[in-house]
Image (tube, rainbow, N blue to C red; front, side, top):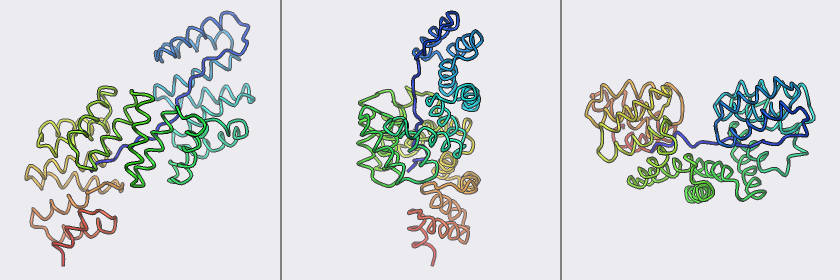
Length: 341
């Protein structure tokens, strides 16, 4: 199975208000920028927010919306800086803290995110967005129980929050509660059919069940929405390996590694490709690199040991399987029991 990517989404807010700004030129650019933001023309929106800020440097809403647009273009450090500048000008604007917490999370600055969320907890304790972000922070700290509590509360506060369902489904997936996970992903898709993460995650569940045609359908749909995602390439490649389409599988896994060279699942899958081609010597470097990343990867030690065994290196095979056994690799545990006495 290949479940490297269960995306835990960060909240997507839309701030398009204007708090009684009486500077007509700045307001003109701000309103034009908001239109571009709604239409997802993020770079043009950023340019127009800059125009508004240049006309009126204390235009806090423009900083806020510029921060959102920067996050939408994967520019979290710049968003964090813009939002910090705004907070320095006006501290009584909790929306800035909420969005800066998201930027901090994307940057892996967990303490900063927690500080911002704590600063607004009284105002936002009944906000679905606040609980999604708090859940994401708990996920980043591997506190799945606390994360689940926050996502439950997010759904209770707003049962149309598709992101909360995706994130809660990811928790269920990681704890092995696949029917609950699938139900949440399907609910998210009913609310927002364009959620590629939910499609990808359903594909992972079908892969877990070895329902290869269904899994392939989900990954194909995810790639229509996001045709450059390296994880989706890899996940589809894994399915193709198991349906005999080895050349196409290799092409997709290679594309995944070009974009994300340290993806341990893609490295494992490339090793599996060579193993299926009866080329264990070519497979081993990929398996070894995946192992060196020290990430939990299903079946990695089982496949790696099999490559050593095919090369008549039984001692190394058994050592690899025994390590996999400690790490609860089911395939490694089975092979160690059959070959290593």
